[in-house]
Length: 24
Image: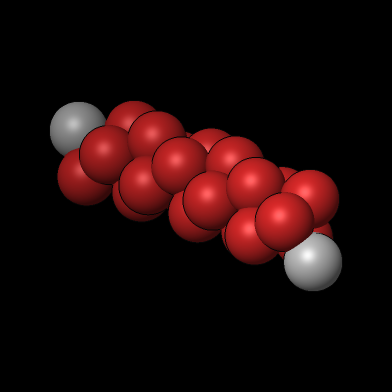
């Protein structure tokens, strides 16, 4: 379950980066 949380956090970070790029 700990790995799942890490994966979710990683995916969330990637989504945030993509959103920031689109905002530019």
